[in-house]
Amino acid sequence: MDKPKKLERIGKYLRVRLDKRLKSRKTDTWEVINNDDESLGVISWYSPWRQYNFEPEIATYNHRCLTDIAAFLIRENGKRRKHGRT
Image (cartoon, rainbow, N blue to C red; front, side, top):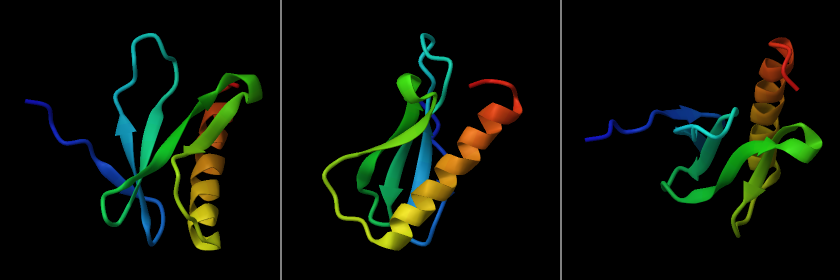
C-alpha cells in the first residue's frame, strides 16, 4: 500500500502535493490543491522556458492565491539555479 503523499501548505487556501517523479523526468511535479481537496492544476518543469510553471485546470483565482503560487514558483526555480541546474 502506498503511503499518502505529504501536503505542503503554500498559502492560506493552497497546498501542494509532490507527485512521484517519473524515471524519465529529471524534475519534480506538484499537484496544487485547495482547502476542499480539489485539484487546481500542476506545477511542473517547462523546458522551453527553463523554469517551473503552473498549469491550471479550469478554476477561479484571486490575487492572494496567485501570489502564493508565484512565491512557490520563485522558491523552486531558485533551488534549481542554486544547484547549477537550469
